[in-house]
Length: 263
Image (tube, rainbow, N blue to C red; front, side):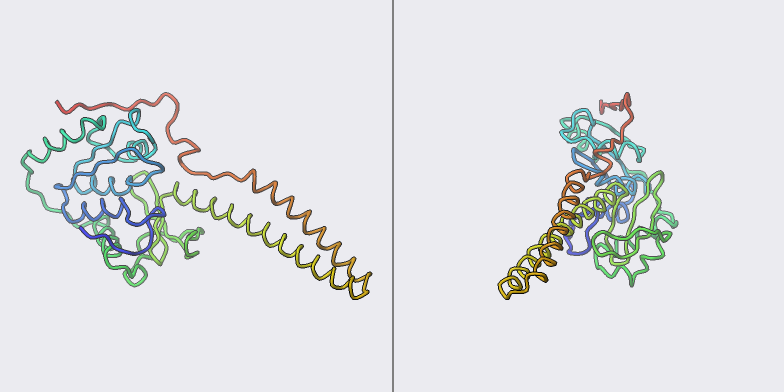
């Protein structure tokens, strides 16, 4: 196992998705992936990769998770083998590793070819040179981190995105990053207006001290106008939302998840 520097996946590095994806590609049916309590949908893509290549998937029962959105996302998009309370997962892992593994051969497919490329990117970098732009269809979206164009990669029922420098996002993580960037830009606009107003007032005072009263009033008037525009943006930024799969809700009301015991 290696912890590598490189582009973030779902806004973090190290990445649980990159870890699961590489385990799936290297170990195939011998890989076991476990998703526990956590926010957003980290791990869902990686768990899907483990399941796709014949591995075993385990998810903590959402009702017992402190933060249930990671388990809920995994259950929504992956045909999970076992859904268990956290207290039972360790014992069940001990049971699984004792079972004999049937021999199998990983079949070449579009999924394994793409996975091989992504595993190389996670280990070595050089996403553009390794052909990341051929991994999916081009989209009109851009990467919030580097502003590069994003390609859409389909995995079962879910979509995720990667840019040519290697940053990767689930759709929920991309939405949160875009909205966060929008909020930051609004604060930058407010800062720009207020700095401009301060500079205009500074210049106006100098003009008035020099006797150019008429010109000074023009500067003061423009400063007041910018201050008013700043207040307008300030009202907007206070209403700005941070949107993601977490706060928009991923689980329809009344949905229940089956607890599969290990005994």
